[in-house]
Amino acid sequence: MNERCAAWAQATNERLTAASLPIRVAHFATIWTVLFTEPGRYNWLLQYYLRAEGVTLTWVGTGRCLSNMDFTAKDYDALQAKLVGAAERMKADGWWLSVEEHPGREKAMRTRLTREILGHLIQFPPPIERFYTEVMRRKKDDHHASHSDATNQLFHIISSTAFLGCYALAFRDLTTAMWAGLAALFLRQIGHAVLEPPCHDKEALLLGFNTPSKTAILGAYLLMPAIHLAARSWTGESLESMLGRVAGEWFLWTLVVVGGRVVYLTFAHDLRSALVWFVKLVTDPVTDVVAYSPRFLRRA
Image 1 (cartoon, rainbow, N blue to C red):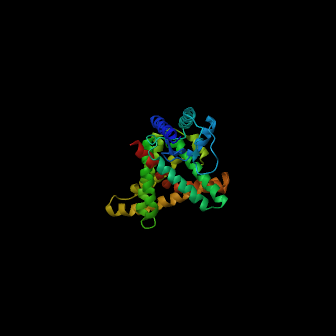
Image 2 (cartoon, rainbow, N blue to C red):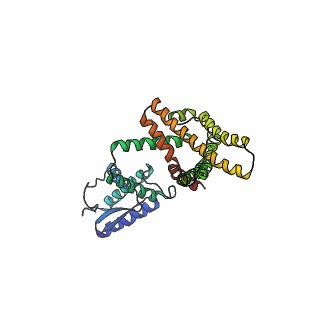
Image 3 (spheres, helix red, strand yellow):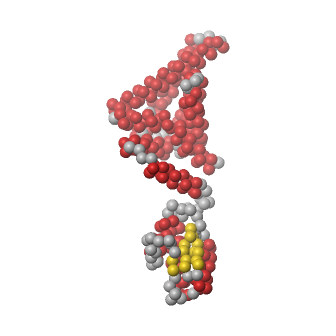
């Protein structure tokens, strides 16, 4: 019986290897078990595929199986066919992702498991969780609406990185932060206006500014330095003083635009929707870097 079980395990593993299935059979005498060769969050589903083939495993225990002493070679052949058939169907249904198709699968799985564990250990009040979920949903809708072009994604990586630097720099050097931020903003909007298809209907659902409004806002940003240049003599000292004045005006204009939108959304919808839009706006640089950098690098 030991030799018969050993021969069955060897033949079964040869079939599993030939079919590129991520399971193997291990045995000691007539005690055997199924081991997974690759990590997966859905490996436990194999027991249901085995049940569909007519092999019922116990719901609790060590995972060890014991072959009956009456098992014949024919019984082992039938068990092998059921085991391989269940694994093939599970793979065909997409529960086992190949490493070639998803090279970062194991790292992503570990990261998500860690996040879920921390999420269960650190409980936030339900209103905060619902608010966070709504913000992330709108970010996802925004990504699908107007961030499909790879070049535009690269522009967003660059502009988002610049915005994050400007957030920190604004407390020490507002002039440099505003000029760098405006350059990043124009790069960001060029990607939307030139590289992405029109999405006015989707923009309305996201509660953000539509394309004509964005054009008017950017035009006001450009008009401010143009007025200063037309009214001043072009000397080094005057240009240097103009940079600080324009940066201050840009900062005030930004407060008016963002604050005005929050007030408008509060009256047009409600305060919660206004706050969702505001939080999404100020945190977009962080999530954009996370969302687009891996995707762009994989394509490269």
